[in-house]
Image 1: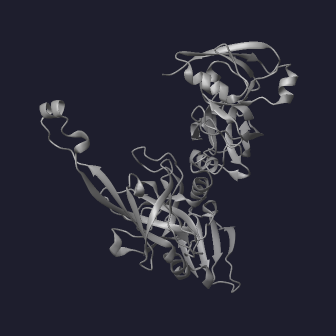
Image 2: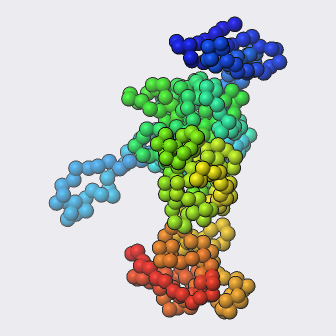
Image 3: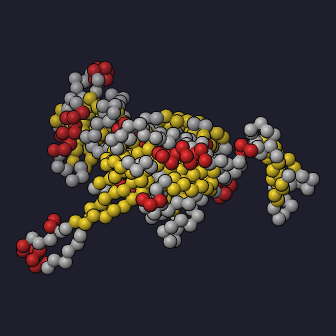
Amino acid sequence: MMTVAGMMATLGVIQACAGNGQGTANVSDGTLADGSAYRTVNLTETDYPDLTYAAESAVDAVVYVEVTVKQRQSQNIDPFLEFFFGFGGGNAPQREQKGSGSGVIIRPDGYIVTNNHVVAGASSVNVTLNNNQSYEATIVGTDPATDVALLKIDAQGLPVIPFGDSDRLRLGEWVLAIGSPLGSQLRGTITAGIVSAKGRSMPSDGQFKIESFIQTDAAVNPGNSGGALVNKKGELVGINTAIVSQTGSYSGYSFAVPVNIVKKIVGDLIDFGSVRRAKLGVSMMTVNDEIAKKLKLSAPKGVYINEVLKGGAAEKAGIRKDDVVIAIDSTSIPTSSALQEKVNSYHPGDKAEFTVIRDGKEEKCFVTFLGDVSATGTVDVDGSIAFYGSKIRTADKQTLAQYRLKQGVEIVSVGEGKLLNAGAEEGFIITYVNEQPVSKAEDVIEIAKKSRRAIYIEGVTASGRTSYFAFGKDE
């Protein structure tokens, strides 16, 4: 028996004992005579990490990514000659720069996930498999906010790494980082470490908009970007993305985008060509001791809502300022980064149950997530058309009959933008725009485009009252 204890008697004690031969670890808690707590863990041989299966099964699905970026060279041209004779500018020669990273094959028909910063600005992308076969790759799509990019090569029957569940990762769990550190000569390098932290907000210059990285101590260096982070089952749990270092090389801290975020991003890129990101519409912060005391919470856990945006999904669901979110769809939410990661897993239109603490009691709020404000004229998957942050569509016959109208365009949702600020409400039927009758949503868009200064809208409210509103148009 091995006993590990702290320097003070009040610290906990862990007793590690021989296993029971059943292939599982038995854990029991107890209290010593002096009142200190201890935990006894019975370990079997299968509980000790054997990472050979994960390494051997995953390495063939990690690729080397080489990119070419063309940059225009600056020239020292006499300003007099440039002004009068047009020298310089578009005639400046271009030079090619090479860069590299890693990628992970996620589908046998050639889809590969990597980091956005690996392929950003690339004029060509070349992928080399672990068997030395090389392919030209096309960029299917990118998402700078999460630093995820999706590539496609013309190949079939490729080895893949199956997706795991990053939500189920545990602190201290063994993981492997696989990639091509420092270039092509070290392709397929495997390093091991543990999960050091979850939901980590990484120190950066603001280039990342997610704050839910997996932190590990697996050695990762430049060139590992876009490579695989796998668990001991050989499942993909993250995409290695960045390190924190004073030298530019590994110094003990590496960060990966959780695979549950990656799955959603690449799924959107394949299905829609762009990322459909759910929006909650709140300003928030992790509950600290001061907030916990102010709200008389039992512990400083959860996410404090300090602002609810007008017209957002949270407001429509009944979430209020000073609420504390503690769970989403039964998933515990201890920090703001955990809430952000969970929301990132949803699409606009998805529904979720939020558990909040309000005035000392648990309340349930049912949220239907909204999406990004689309450019005016963009057609959504449901057939509605974006109009200054809101959605409009041609009113159906039943709706027109209800208001005794022959034609009109319905405002089906009001999001952040000019219509909301002008006082528009859902269910409003637009009958005239700038004194011109409209019969379909496209009429509204066309008249608005031709307007030079302001847009004047007349119609009928959801309660049947004739009304109007107007707003200025940005040039």
